[in-house]
Length: 473
Image (tube, rainbow, N blue to C red; front, side, top):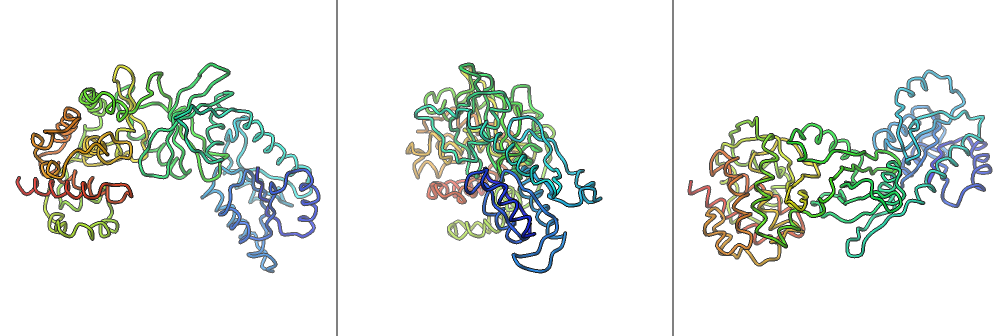
């Protein structure tokens, strides 16, 4: 537990220390006496409660006390770490200011102990209430520690203390006594994706996919999921809950899974390549509602590429691809279709059950994309994603890569030919012609240069192939 108290009156600071420090462990209570020192503490660490005086100086020892400095801290908390409970420490609890601030109050089940207000008041005359409030936080966190975090050998996932807290908060809110987690290989964002099963005793009550990310990204993912999840029933899991408080800058979204979805598409491909085409076709059917309606767009290739890579990032990437004359290619005109799309449809974002029924997870990139983006991501992520079954398979050779635009020659020695062909057929149908297909593949391949473990030679060879294919149309 860590509590931040922001108070500049030396007498109050002394009494707070005398009252609190003997009752709590070393390091659990931090007292700051100015705006700047409080902001620095908040930026450097994670706090479970903030007790905030409004009237503060800008820096320790300064003589410029003003209520605006406390308001600055409050604004930072609401903007950057909205899940941290705040208690105003005030001599004037009837001030109109606090009436207005009570409009900010949200009820959150912060630590799985029931909903409580995120913003409240403590009169300065009641030092005992500060102690009581902190003791309640400490008891809630100790209750979380009683929940066992289980991990099977060979499936461990490395979690920080705050990430462990998030999964335990989730389990506590589902009345669980234990939670078992295992890794799911996500993309290249800072988010952590895992499978999480809640238990009461030995009985599993919830099987979920959890995504741990920043609170800002969390709210965006929820909005995108709600906006773009108009798919067939069962295409995407429902949200069990979001952990939006109690873990500093981080939070978690937990999606309910049906029993049996314990493998990713890449897991299936690695063991049974022949199943790939069937799953690819099933995914295409699942996301068909996204394709209608679609919008036709026309413009230079660089305009389509911007959906994948910004101009600033592209300028850095293009330095290593000078021999391909990308500037000329990017100026060529192309017509493509756009529609609602997953936006990050690699094989680890597709889970599969024993009947080869797929379900989609992780909607962090959902939005309007070129219509061929999702099927091409399914195809090419098998080559470039860190968990892709083709990443170290020795295929395609440099010669085969040069024939990407000619599926017959390209797939001659491919161990996953039916799967790749199913993805390519879907991409072709989604793009109004070969040029849109090649331009979308080009944009996807350019984006691979952003990532440290990309096979740059292979990506470069494939870019050369799609440019050749485009030129031949």
